[in-house]
Length: 77
Image 1: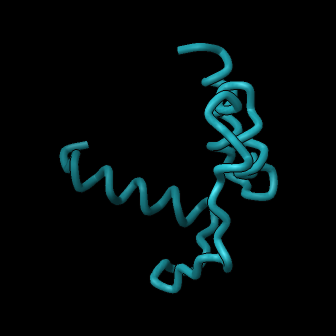
Image 2: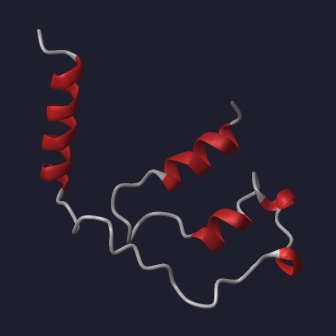
């Protein structure tokens, strides 16, 4: 895997959404730039609303949920 791919993934996986790379920034990243043509990009007329998702979780909530899920797969741990 190239260093550019790793760098892009690291930026996309930042936990804090305020520090995470934006879609526009990601599309301009050297790894994706050859695949991106601004003239062929569809534009969403209005933002998606994900009402079905649960409210925001804290980092501690997410850690707890992951731990519980892992216990389901590894009950002897």
